[in-house]
Length: 577
Image (tube, rainbow, N blue to C red):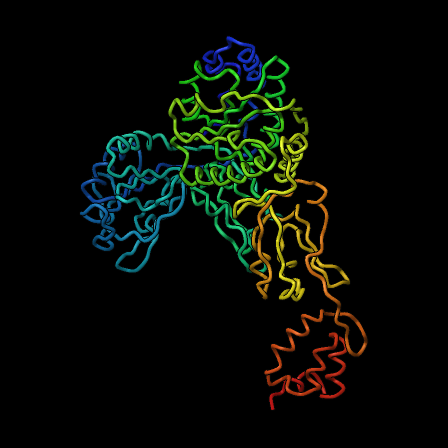
């Protein structure tokens, strides 16, 4: 849990295993020496405190023997959920002590939490109860949970810290029984993320927009809270797929910040070139299973491939991949070991499709961004094979920004300036975070509901003119405008517009002549809006008279004056005959 030290420094055994028979190998050695421990230092940490209060869940034949192995070092409560594996029942509310252990027979209704803060809710003969309080353990929570049921009560791709669910795997059960006694005390881990709610596209005005981070989180640490999200730092274990999926950069990976990571990438590639290396390729791998694979294959790895250790391979996304290519990498490979959650793999594949489409639109090969999901030797040894270089490529030297989309645009602009076959625009797969919106002018009334919910300022009104204005470079394709439109006049069109001037320019999607108040002449609506309103209200009892319909054609000030002048006030106008 307290793993803040770098494993990639000058004492790394990988340095001794990588071959250096050619100029590329010697350049690689020089480049790797520039990677300092700063890339694995946490800006802030999350603390867990465990007093050793353990909840063991299972049938009596499994749970009691397991608790007996732990009771000499820990305080154990055993929740017996039934005599048959998988049973969630039991005699409600039965409580007794055996050999210093508290045994409870009850129905488990809910189990939530993490190391030092697990809360269990059970059904007893007197109703629902907090299991820790009901059991008299002296606190209202448990610190650790050993769940021997199958399937487990908590089912996630990555389980909460302090929760052990070995199922029927005897080896996993033995490992859990050996590790649990060591999980007493205070523990720290990095806080892996930073969240900026100001640019979050999750929702607006009660409407649902982007849900990408919720869909890809393997720990279920992210929840919807109205128009924003909430991330529980104690459940988050740094998978990074939320930051990779986030279209606005509202969630960013903080271990390390992307800016620091890309500064390291730029330095590595620059050092490699200055040391005489050619056509470098980066191989991102995590510090666990990915590192083991690289160490195993180090002596056979092509000398132009530079292993680059990161905390989690799912934490690097399009901004990192394309910036690395702009900095001079001929390819960027992602090595995802067996410990990477399936949801993270799926999101990496999705994001790689978006990035590959952007590269192909410039004439580059999509093979420059491979994902290696197996630890097979051929997967690493055959990837990123040297190929004849294009015209001389000038490596970028821009400093990465902490703002995700700015960094990505800087990278694409540099790649596009030297593109083999540059296009003006390229369509992207559905769900991509770039594109335009299309407006049906025949049905759009310029009500500006879309402007009110746009989280990225991609849409704006024309101030005193009835206009809908769009800036494509800001659009994240969250769909809030499409959802908010009462006339279903908006559709999303994912694409990437390469020209930076066109991306930042505004264009008018719809405009109409203003409708002016029939009394004072003040413009207050559009003709389309008035026609639509008149059509919808003509059958309503309040608008059967000529005078009532005329009031619809007045601005708010003149309408009030007219109602007081001819009807005696606001209330009389709405009195049903």
